[in-house]
Length: 153
Image (cartoon, rainbow, N blue to C red; front, side, top):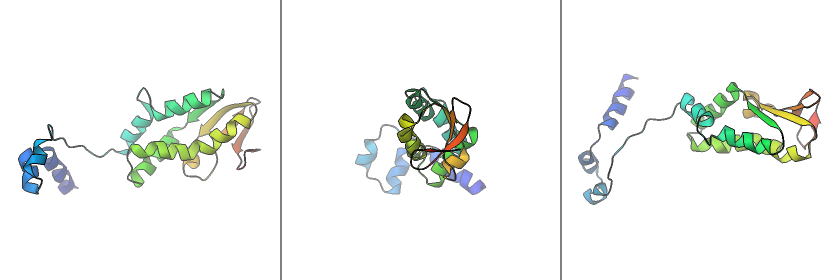
């Protein structure tokens, strides 16, 4: 682990001359006004990306569900699982939208035809595909969305 930390530190000290020594042609290196290194995103950073920005993905999906007068809730374990999947797939922050889209697509498609839905809850088991999202109806019934658009009780 110490060797990995030292390797990362070396990258932070890279100068344009180092890039030329590595084999890049000076004309190309001269067109790079700034040489910057970036650290990999960890799970906590990916969860923050899902939650915190003004236009965070979770906020975008909240708005989409609000258009159907339905509240959307992401449990903490769901967001951690989305981040873990993105890290496992090595897609980083760019993969977050794809994962969320795959998790919510069927529910978003079925929602307009479902009646009296008050809330949809997503937990880790939904993200892993083990279960469907919880659909909570105005009559306080708690069910899972069934494949095919109906609901199981």
